[in-house]
Length: 187
Image (cartoon, rainbow, N blue to C red):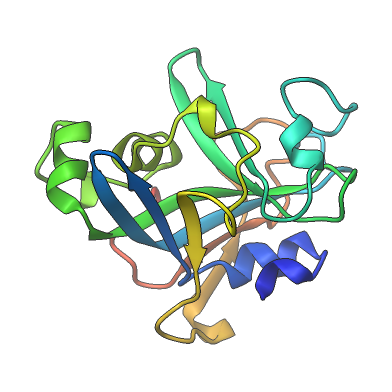
């Protein structure tokens, strides 16, 4: 299993193609992960950079722990912790290719434009019905799951670039996406 390695950059690349699935009372929604960003503990953009707090505690959980946080006072983002317990590192899931439960995603997002359902971290959280109450869930033991990819991707299929939407550590090449995917947040 990919989460058994403690190399956050390897996991961030390796999660591309995995399926994120949420089984909720409203129905099942799922998408293929097409874009990620890595956040390492020594990285000034990482929420765990300074120290462990109540807010970022899930980042310090065992690999696969879910970390949901709010940005700009209105949008939520979902991360998966990646390093050993007590080392605060995680991968932000930036974009999904919608796969299952698309009508439910359209209702949640109030749009029928497929590209706009999950093409950004706030959009995908809304479309998938992910919420703050999922903090500390685990993707191997909860209704929010990571399933292995159906297709294998080579390094030639993956673009490595700098992260977007941050000011500190923006120059680090910690953003990964599937080449040619129309569902990424930004090329």
